Every structure is written in structure tokens, then in C-alpha cells.
Length: 338
Image (cartoon, rainbow, N blue to C red):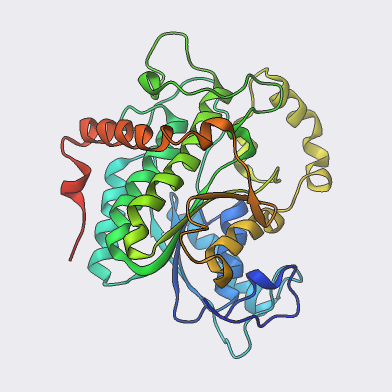
């Protein structure tokens, strides 16, 4: 996807000339998404920031331009030689609304823009009490999995052959600190059974779903040469932890250490490096890398549930069924082929 160009770079594999490539990054206005988008733009990529808030998205763009051009930040890659601007644009997308996802994809189709890399970065974590999206889905599985699944399905026809899809997962797909080991319950993905909701189990299952989705999409997109990757960023100092207000051990520790978080947690850029590598490194192209789980800039081994070959197609079946029930039509009927 390009050649190395920058001397200010922690890993040559993320330093590429991305001119002529178009990326879409969800949740790009803050944290990991912001760092990912800024670095891609500095390497010459055209990047669409898919953000829930137009106001916050525009603020992110203004900050991004300043950090790339006016007062360049010292971290990350240098601005690609010859660039006089960064190509970043905003589109509103709320992954907690299936209709917002559909509208986003329809606008993208109408624009005639083709996508090289879709980065499903946006997510929420550890909501203390069960809440629902506008479609009646449990909030964490709704935003972290169902929204991203539908977006990927609808954007796939708009992607160039040989493109890539990134799913942001988490170490929490195994066992969040101080919590029970993550399990699967395909008959209760929406936590509709009484007294079954647990904030950390819901989060862990949604992150496990990201890994399983990456595996299943890898098989289904292989014919077009589109590769998928599930990435975990490590424990990063981002706004993702803002919902940790319950009495669990992890939440209590997080609140106690909040004043020190910028010293003891990874920076958003450090957390984003694995995502960026999977999105741009030419050496990771090909089916032998697709559908794998990545962390710390390398392939890692996920949980046993993530490795069980029966789980990805089962989750796909359940996901498509739930979406059909919510939308009143099969997802295939929504596909936006030209």
C-alpha cells in the first residue's frame, strides 16, 4: 500500500505513502480513532471521519489540521513530503441507530467514492445498567457489534478489491480484570432474559463478537481479495472509560487511578499503531493474514471461544436474523450494488 517515507516513526510498517487511498474511520473524533485518522491523513490518505456528533467531528478536524500543518505534533509520523494539506472530511454516523448506518452508506454510494479501508473503531464500554439503542438492542452489543456488522455489510460493495476491514476488539474478550471469564449465549445476545445483564460480560461478548465477525467476513470477502483484521490496542487512556461508574473492581480501580492515567496507560497513538499497521502494511496483505487477531503490532492468539470454528458462522446467522427482525427486511436486500 505504499513505501516507507518518515524518519519520525516507531515502526516502519506503519509509515506508508497513502496518496490515492480512501479510508473510513468510525468514532474518529476522539481517542484511538482520532490518533488513527490523524496519522493516516499525515501519510497522504483521504479519510472520512464517521462521527456521531457533527460538532465534535468538526472540532476534531480543526485540531487535526492544526497538529499536522500549523503546529505539528512531535509524535507519530512526519507529514508526507510535498503535502500542503490533509484530506479529512466529516460524515455523521450513529452506530446506535441502524437507520443512521443505512443512511451513511447510501450517502457514500451517492458520492461515488470508493473505499480502500474501513476501520470499525467506534465503541462503548461497561455501561453499568442495561440500556437500549433506538432499535431496542442492548447498547454495547448494538453499537460495538450490530452497528459495525451492518456498516461493513453495506460498505463492502463500495470497497475496492484488495481492500481491508479492521474490527477494534479488546483484551476484554477473554476475561475483563476482576470479572468472570467471558462466555457466549447465542440465545440471549440482546440480554432480554431477566437478571442476566452484566456490564463487563456484555462488553466482553461484544468484543468477542468483533473477533468472530472478522473471521467470518474474511471467508466471505476472500474472493474479492478484501482482508479483515481484529485488533486490540491494549489498555489506553481514552474516553472509552467514561461509563465506568459501577461498583465493580475494575471500575473502582479505574476511578482511583484516573489522575495518574496519562502516566500509567498507553497513549492513543501507541494503542492505534496496531490498527494502522493492519490497515496499511503491504506485508500483511493476503488470505494467510485475513481474519486473524492482532495486538502489540503482531499476530496474537485470542481466546478458545474465538478460535472455535463453529462460532463465527453461528454468530453471523444470529446477527443477520436479529437485523432482519429489526429492519423488517433481509440485509441482502439492502446491499448497495451499483
